[in-house]
Length: 98
Image (cartoon, rainbow, N blue to C red; front, side):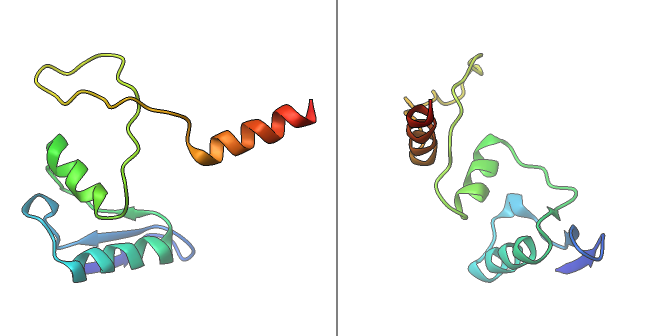
């Protein structure tokens, strides 16, 4: 695994990882540390289907699912969503100011 800075202050490229094959905890932590240090982390040449993309993303916390406007044939149904806690708090504060 190689980290190559793309800019002195932000953005790095991380190569030598095949996300589709799955990653171990050490690799997950290295990706997280790279994101923390550079804010933008590019992982080139990844070939992930929807399930593998979701599995990778869920390593870093619960996924937020946007409502589907067009169902993908054979794809998962979007769960019912409510407002995010931060959005609810923000909306209440904005309503009080009016």
